[in-house]
Length: 581
Ligand SMILES: Nc1ncnc2c1ncn2[C@@H]1O[C@H](COP(=O)(O)OP(=O)(O)OP(=O)(O)O)[C@@H](O)[C@H]1O
Image (tube, rainbow, N blue to C red; front, side):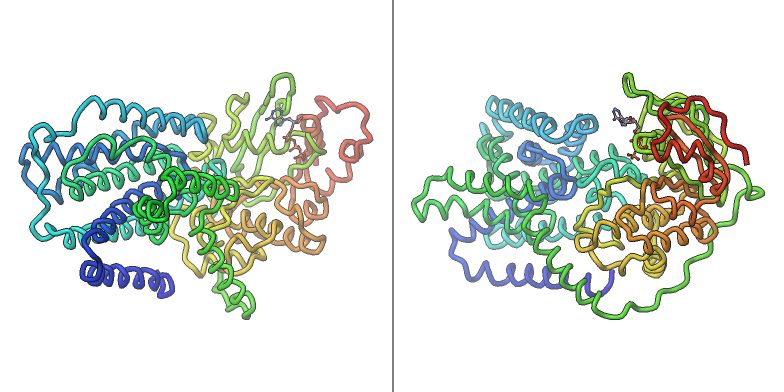
């Protein structure tokens, strides 16, 4: 972490310290009680921050996880279990984890509103169970004793701040891990995440598990706040209202969690004070949340992004500092002349449409191979099938001589098969450097990242994706694929949107990629100038068939190719023998 990244944390900790010292002295007892409620809500908001804000999953059952935490704390209290409240809090959080994972399992197959319905269903079931059963200790009138150090309301407020800060630090550190970073990408595009070697299933389950843990802690804290709880404290509708607040404010940032917590705790009092019915708050948040969902950004995302963009514009106005040399490529395998990727007899059908029919194609070690053909020829379908995004194809795909047909997209990516998409799906709130880090899947030094970005003509790494144009985003996607140092990168029309000069420059850069990075390339392109500049070999598809394959110059001069490409062939060329060099 550099100094500028540490500064907000330092300010946050100072503010937390100031709140712990000043508020208990300054606030009257009722407001202290509200402040505790706000901090407990803030912790609950942190759980929404993980699942909704970071992972982008619509979960409407966080209150149920909180209820589990509360139930465990009260059960341990009833049994006078050893360890005391602080340990019970942690155990309450841990008890919610397996339930969170179980609720997360449907998320592996369904998403969006359907998943929201599943979580809502769990929330309703919890409501029913809680209404039919009392929390432990209720009939025995055994309420919870706070720890001696935090027994007073003032002391308990300090405890809630400490818990909030510890969770914020823990989540902040976790967000810097590959799994944590993967959530940002997951929220934006599961396909892009899988293409970067991220296991979507593992990421989602981790998000459910961690958010359930944090919600469980919040439930335990609620018990400490009001000493005994009832089912209405965890009503399912509260989850829905808090979800709306979370979407609007963005509790995946600590300041958002605090804001959400304060709103949640004092909204009722505020509405009461100004004489408005309580439902108005929920309606206002609901409407505002719809706008936030439509824009894709919460308030804190928006504010942080604007700040980053302002800093980046200042950075762009300055001269770019010199970048270090790129690290040397890994040595070639074997004699350096074998095929890295071999596709044999690849056939893909979409119902009646035969998108690919018995396609053979190879990409050699240290080579750039072009894959061209008219619109609808099957080029993107080939990339999708080879990288595992299209299940159920016929034929085989071999990477370094090993069949990978049974592997999922993320496993293929981790084995060294990276792809880009025709439509980029990069989370705009990331900086380019962060995006490279996610894609690389390894520790990528600043120097290497800057050199890579410069090589592909992208601005410096601290520039956020939100302010770079569509053409540069495609180049960034290519840089991200290469950052992973894969065996083969499959690039789907990476130069779309580039000017002729930019495209030619990009072609020259691509031609250098195998030697500079040790990465072989399969390039899908319509720009023949670029194909000539970058590729030694070209394969031509037409109506899902290979109609020509060989050295670039020979293939592009082939009349059958010209006819097919320019649309002058009046019938599809079926089963045409490949052009031999
Ligand atoms: N998901 C799908 N469902 C049904 N048909 C599809 C699907 N995806 C592709 N196709 C069909 O498969 C054929 C090949 O499409 P593909 O997108 O691979 O072509 P392409 O060569 O990449 O075209 P372009 O240059 O326009 O990107 C087309 O007839 C297309 O309509």
